[in-house]
Image (cartoon, rainbow, N blue to C red; front, top):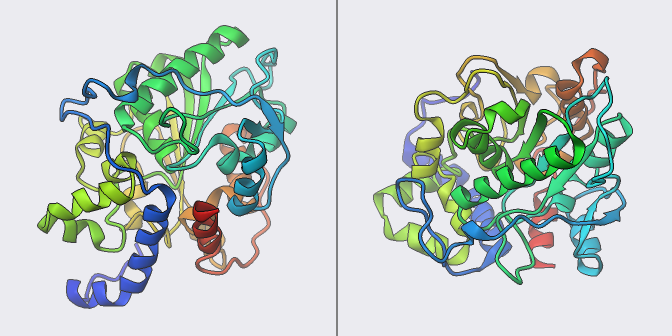
Length: 346
């Protein structure tokens, strides 16, 4: 599927080392937090984790931004920002869009950071849209950094809140990066399937990622995981290929009956390699590869939610009856990475 496998592991690591170091810099710069929460292999978080904290629902409407750096700068002055039009608990679904849409952000991010554009677009399309901040530490400035089992439970609590407020029977879910994993865990493992019509995962680490060869190296030298945790976050490490969470998430099949699944991924994803790890393999799963539709669009992991082509693909997945073919325009490889680094240090 377009991936060359003839090169040795050593030469591959040498060729991607600069990118790998940059990715580590992104991860490390995002959080720089010590580990205080870890899940047991059984999937149950240990005592003292964030498991019993409710999700945070931002309420101050914020305008669409042109990227994660602009969103981060806005959040400095408006830490309670939510994508414009979202989290209106008086919204009632209509016949054309009977299911509210729940948005789940990625690692070390927030509802506003990742969905400042997609959220308003879906509202304008006629959906009731809700966006939650999950997986944060008390008093922390970012979210999606803590135990992913606990975050999945928080997502479930938020879905119940949305269903109770709107009177809807089910929601649709859109998750970006880690948000795709915790929403799918809620659906597949926490009895969420009865509450969800369809799931859309953007840059979904469905089977985890090796992060440009860094994960296999760490698996040979386990102490590196401790170092990674100390300078990154619990959630980042828990999403690696072969981790306990990823293994449990996909055990018995990566989809469950009654829910439609769509992944939207990139061949040049900076965090998930091989990129085939984005795709789901179960029934009722549609896997969309960006470059198969628009070869000149080299958008990777960090830019996907701010890419207009991907944004339209999300809307098409949620509302196939009104699908529109996006405009295919060139996007340079690596677009958005520098913004993420600057946003992490802003």
